[in-house]
Length: 335
Image 1: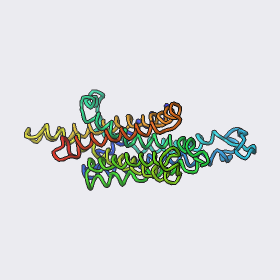
Image 2 (image 1 turned 45 degrees about the vertical axis):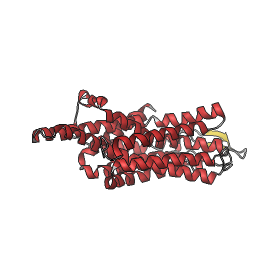
Image 3 (image 1 turned 135 degrees about the horizontal axis):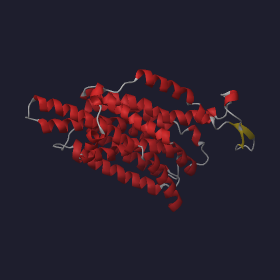
């Protein structure tokens, strides 16, 4: 878990590096494609793990199986270690490719003090909140979706459906970046949060304790819509960040001459890169908060409704924040 966390931080660093290669009008598409492919790992794990643990794919190298009793009362062999070992060849290939093929951008290097300036930037913290609402929701729902199916619809095999949501969210993320390049990140993010709040309301409606009396089809459809919006929102918020910080630095340099403008472009790109990395790390906390909220709500009230209502309130705060600072006419930082 520790090493995966470090890898996640390095993934955020790769997003920061990629932002230097593309002009403002193409950053959303580029960042969305890179992150969308990266996010496919969540779905891949949930799809492959249940398959590989049932097969002796590594033969003599994998160790002994474990005997378990399945739902039919039969004893079967599983190789739980395969859920980890299956990734070793891919990790090795990526390590070799990274060593020989990847390079840092010399102009993009920045000391800690250079990067620490973002902690004094208001828009860094605002975008952390919004990205927690998009990527945090994606990673949190990915982790909590099987738990919710199992607790609310025990007759359903959660493993058959758990991987579908993360797949939808990952595949659609590049589209969110592309759409934001066309329409603007702020407007896409604003309406995206509106749909997210409505989708959570739909989940509440289709729960067994909800007004519908329980419908797995409706519950599943609303969650697929939620995953769809998390992917689009991931792309749109990451498109907003480079535009915000470049625009902010250029405003400060306005009227001070071409050298000041050139320095502003460098500073804006460096700050945007640092914010991309920092918000990516903060967004990952959704992987803890959402499943924990489900568990606490179920333990305290007997159902997940309280957690879902909190999510709606959170999305309403994201709607208000996006509209006020970025999307309305005469907003402080239109993007």
